[in-house]
Length: 81
Image (spheres, rainbow, N blue to C red):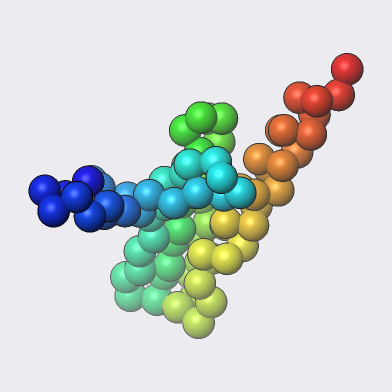
């Protein structure tokens, strides 16, 4: 939260986001033809990292999707008796 009361969704190099209402932290980067993306869900201790050695494809979407599927599976298995 900024002094102006405006919410700022970036801290310490991480983007503050959520997956279906569950808070997560994200960070991506690239250098000389390589790309990366990390999604951390602290409440469930899930960390998914996507790496690409081609600057033609970003691993962002697939990394987020894997994190979401993992979170959904964890929640589904927790409901089973």
